[in-house]
Every structure is written in C-alpha cells, then in structure tokens.
Length: 193
Image 1 (cartoon, rainbow, N blue to C red):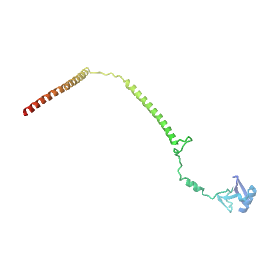
Image 2: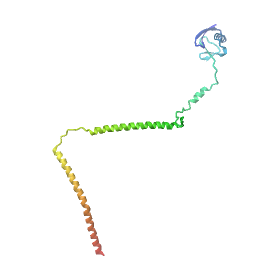
Image 3: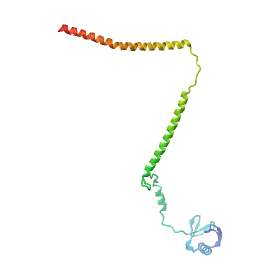
Image 4: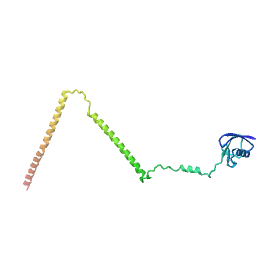
C-alpha cells in the first residue's frame, strides 16, 4: 500500500493509503459522498489514470464544458476597434449629441474670449497708468543751445510762410505768361493771314 498526499475539493491536504488508481477513487468517493463520475483526478495539473505516489494528487469536481471556440472569439474581438465617437447619435430629446457638444464648446470659447478681453483691458489700463505718470527728471539745459533751437524753429516757420506766399503768387504769374503767349500767337497768326 502506498501513502498518497491528496489536496481535496476543500483545498485541504490529507493522506490516503491505497494500492492503485481505482482503489483511490473508490475510497475518496466514499469518504466525500460524491459519486466517482463527478470527480476529476490530476497530478501536476494533468488528468491521470495512474497515480505516482511521489506527487500530490489533486481532486476536483468535473465541470460541464462546451466544445471550445471561446478563445477564438476573444482573439477575434481584439481586431475590432471600439467605438468611442457617439456624436452622430441622438439624445432622448432627438437632438444630435454633436450639436449639443458644439454648443457647450462654443459657450466655453465665449467665456474664454471674455476672460481674454478682460485681461487685455486690464493690461491696457495698467499701461496707460504707467504712461500718464512719467517720472520727472532734472535736466540742465544750455541757454545757448535753447536759443539756437528757438532760432532754427523760427527760421523754418518763416521759410515755410515765404514758400506758401510764393506758391500763391505763381498762378497769377503763370496766367499772365499764358495771356502774353496767346497774344503773341494771335499776332503771328494775323501776320501770316
């Protein structure tokens, strides 16, 4: 008789003495009151028909299984892309979700624009405050330089006034010259006739 370590259905380790596989299955079935047709005997994760006393025997219940193919379903499912764009769908009111999302984005954009305009207005006000209050500097002006600048400005003003007066007088002179030219042309034409 061989002593066999068995991990049972309750996951507890126990010891059995038996001669072969058939004796062990009968003994375990009587001990647990589970019919032998419902037991699955395995060693090292493989179903066995002979028991090796060097390894622990695991007993579990047989589970009804299908004909397989579930693994191929899982593999095939990896090929399909998940749909995460539901914007073409409609909500309970019948409106497209895309339109609702667009309205939300537009409202957020308007709010951001208002905030930006407020910030720009504040920056402009701060700039104006800085410009309005310039720091006064103590400057030492050379009196000769100041009088030279004043004389230059007066000279420019007088030159501009003289130029404008001359320009106003020129059309009168041009008109006189044109009259004289016309008279000369008339005299020449009279002589040739």
